[in-house]
Length: 423
Length: 178
Image (tube, rainbow over all chains, first blue to last red):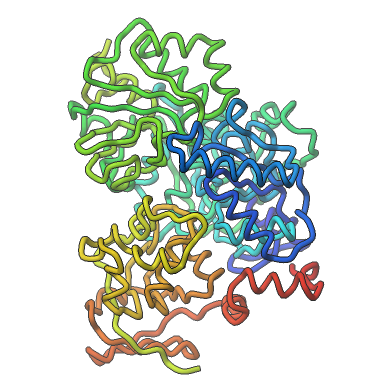
């Protein structure tokens, strides 16, 4: 019996020839990410374990993303304490304000995750790392502390579900639309909980790294343990120059066992949204067209990449964000910000009436930089829309793609970017 | 091992981790006493006051699919429930992040399909950890849960993952974990 890519990774990183779903293993961890909000606690938990030192300080990646720039004196103090801890441990890979980014973007972009290895982070969207063929897993503070001390962590080998994605993408339809389509198709009714979601097929092979990151990122919101895409020539080109570490190609065996295989054809896939409060309450853009909103947001570890701002700029260049709508853009990292500046996307969007902020999780975590107030109706390219996610519990959040956000900002109502309503 | 007996709170929809501990109650670090005061505040308006859930005196939670879903990795949800007196949660399925945190803290998250459809808030339950059976004493019904993996019991017996690892670091056996 063959193995899926995730089973192979669980086996090779736990010194085994093979594993089966349900098996419990202690596996080697390639990198541990922790960030400003939980990092001090994570180091404190590590210290309480009695280990003499970190398993490898080069493989503990520290990021300031939730709290920068600090909006309150309390958060500023928390950040200072976080910086003290990171400096005390002489962590070489510390991404702090000025060289910052959202942790998951940095983990992939800076080469801290590797095909065939397991990386964990104390933030739920660590699933993003599957974009390069790694197992990326979100964990709590205790798990991260254990991995920092031992270089290992326990895992239950997950069952695998494959999404075989065929057809031809119809721009401006994006990976986000596929994520939301799958969300609506599968719901939160237990089908995907604990499982590994493997994406493959011609339409996945056609996706660039940005789209692959979006797709794997949102697998946590589908309830899955991880999302993963086999490394290929696109992965190789992306990682070249980002990491010196050696990796070998790997893929699922042809006879690997799957819990289920779903076929999705993207040829007829249109732009998708999630209605407020429940991620799995999805609808095609046609069903919601004409819905008014007053705030829009594009950023986050889900959709804050250069490709996302590129498509927005292609729609908004030479046009104007409608008065009465606030459009906020936050690049996922400093490198993304620089690339968007060089390509002229920032200029096009700012000229259209968008506001740009320095890289952080921003209002997606409801902490700072444009949080939601009572009565706000927000069109967001982020990942979550439960009550209170972006601030007030009396705000409504529609989730969608950057293309839908851009077209809708011109009209002030939810608009199909394929239509000529905004041109 | 003796049965645990107590009253249950039965969820009527998705229970999301985000509502279990509202963002303004994300203590740094986890603070079991403080987390217990505000746990479940966003799940039901009746619990949205200090000790609102804790004062109800529930021992169990019974839920449907994806208990504690919505994707938060914060351990506050678990320390909050434990501090509020919850000794086991029975659900058709659990969201992965909090399932893992529950195992790491030694709080039994027990898979028991559709039990939520046959229980009401306030029912008295008796849970036998040795056999995995749950008796609804109010209704005279019984449920059989899915057995937990031996590792889960081992971690719980050690007093949670942190103690489990502390012990192995101190006796030098941590390298043998595979």
